[in-house]
Length: 215
Image 1: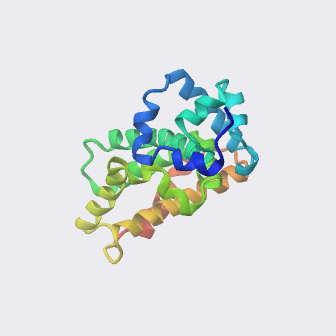
Image 2: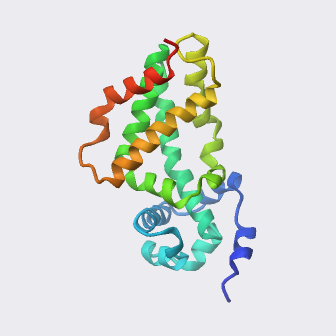
Image 3: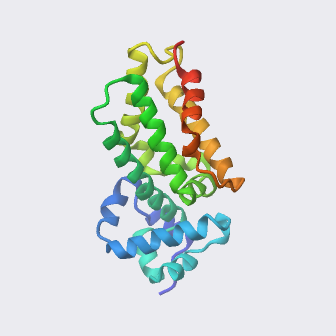
């Protein structure tokens, strides 16, 4: 059987809402190998230089398996980012349990996010370099009520208590937070810095706090 055309594969590819259910049917060790291959290939090469055949070979799976579960290179990357960022969502929700103080909730949110990015630079490179900003909406986790609810809940709570800036929306505060953290992490990776960013956490959080607090 001849491979499908790119347009046909994209059209036949599962939507974002269906990916998790589809991936749940894949053997865990197969999914793990594909995830590892995607990280290694796309974080070290330009997106357009990597083919699905490259991924299949690196993951030691058949090309038919890649087509069956993903259908296109774009959907493959989106799905793997769903899986990877899903772990951040789970960790974030877990760490915020039982914390009531608004400043401490924001501090914990910042720590968990920075720690995850520090420990998973390949995931950050994949997100920042392989997926155009206009396509970020195709990554299911960005629409996750769990993760986005956790993030926005921290900012809304801080605004309601009067400790965070109320002159802008909670979504803008989230954009400021992720914009600063994302840029810092990306340049840390690009420069090849060896010192973990988490070692500078206190000062970085103070900068963010001054930028977003109501004082």
